[in-house]
Amino acid sequence: MSLAIESGATNTVAIYVGAGDDSRKSLKRFHFGAANFKLLKPTQIESFLNDIKTTTAQYVIDRIAIGMPGIVGEQDKKALKRAVDKVWPNLKMVWVGNDTDTALACIDDTKYAIKCIVISGTGSCCYGNNGHKTAKIGGHGHIIGDRGSGYAISHMALREALKDYEYNHYTPDDTEPHEDRSVLMNCLLKHLNLQSIYELVGWSVVASKAEIADLAQLVIKVALMGNAVAKRVLDIAIDDLVNDIKCLVSRLRNDGAKAEGNTIQIGFTGSLLSKSETFSQRVSQKLKQSVPDADIIILKDTVMGALRMISDKNSNSSDNGV
Image (cartoon, rainbow, N blue to C red):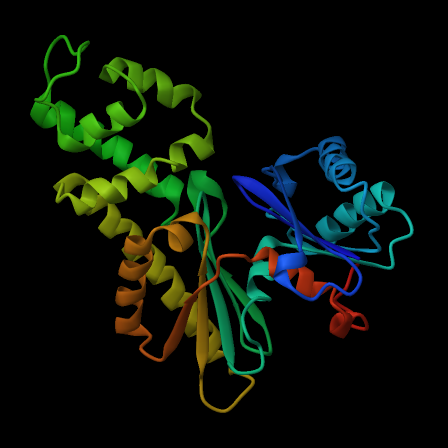
């Protein structure tokens, strides 16, 4: 009777497993809004958890696992666990941690000496474990970090499309749609149902992080059409993400893996890597040039990692709860 929750920058997925349920077909699945521990006040976290409790009220729950971005260190874990205990008192088991932990739990930790996950969705992050220690590269938010993320791609594409327009396609009175604009700029305006550069500027001021990041799929599509600006943006994002992964793998290998040899599995997750075959293939191909022994897989349901944290085989682990 377990409830596993994994939050992200775009949404939250929760799954419920009743007593004796051992098939994915028997899972009850729920969807909620985005949640980041660092961006929510304590009252907002409690309200978020209460929404989940109300939605799942018909089910008996005695174990809960939550993977949430923004959880950094023991103090954050203790604060989130206190909130969980307040909303669901008398639970038998509680595990709380970062969403990178739940994603990493989806990697087979018996076959591989090094296991890593690469997240590229609204944000991005690379995280791994070699049996002795964990390491993280990237993340740190969309303002100064999140290299190779949906937001990074979209933000750069907007800037480069505007620069290309001003340098090469400018007209004094750009208030109506016309074909002289660059392909990327026209595609962006059409996708957003905007008529002019001025409307695009207005949209960019009020658009949310998720709304901007959503443009990444369009940028990939335009790059495949051969547009030079979009291709350049995509190449930079792929290079950034691959360099982050290479740095992570090097750090974990230099520290020594738990098994002989350096067998490594890298799981790709996040909306860009799990939903865009073009993007994931490009990243994989470039990564293989530097890490040829990596076994690369796509992780599409990482909330299952949260469920693993409160499974029976982990019930005696000191890593369950705080």
